[in-house]
Length: 387
Image (cartoon, rainbow, N blue to C red; front, side):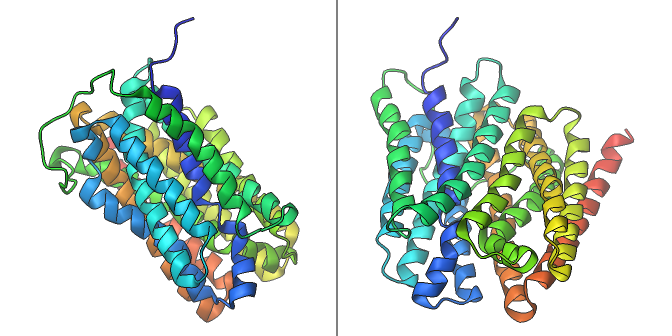
């Protein structure tokens, strides 16, 4: 059996742990509320600091690995992510918590753009397989993160510190492997400025735009789960346990990961189906919260998991298929930028709705947003399907 290309395993693991880290604070928000007296609007700032950090880096440095190489960029991102976890673990105040999330977002922007491009470059079965590996690692990390943090919060001492320390330990594994790679294998780079804004060629604006609308439904779901997953559980299932909330969020995200392995079919069709299914899932959550009916909430889990999973899988694959090899990190970063804009907008917008009208109204808003995006995806696909 042939050995995988050098760096493939380390890059895959780094992507997985990076996404695991993104949801590490999720089950901790009730504890922050209780200890620091935070309100819903302040929790929204904590959550939104993460995508804001990602977006700033993607705009200026999204194509950096196309210019200086994949491995150096991944090392930098992993190092910054370890530093961000240390800041969050020692945060004494809301301001420090937001700063840690901003730094975490910046590190995530470096890792995801460079990591996705590296897997497309390195995977022995080509670009499509590399993109599938990317979405599998991202989704698996998202699925493990809330469950691990929820169990650490419920069972281990130091609930506002231990989950971050565990994440640092996990990050040290791929970081050490990337450092050990050294520079023995020269990477093809292009002479250019370190800071350069990302651009999408006009010839692929339409397919990238369709993918952006599709992944926005996935990230609206992630925003709701990340900021208000425990509140949804408390409203619909009358339980405020961090373990129960973590299990609810992780159940959905496990399905997102499973879909990355099982999804088959034309990507354009999968994007439309995923968006519609996600809208239906949030409709079920709205009903469950309004009726305080746990059974309906449970029924929403497969809809949200499958819908969000299809949106992630198909949109990322679509972008990978149309991206020029020499600009893979740049184009994928543009796609990620659109995804995190949706994440930040959802966090702020839904936070305002929760503050003003409650979690049921926020779930109904998520339903409407996903339904509107479904229409956009379908309208964008109609001309292409008719050719």
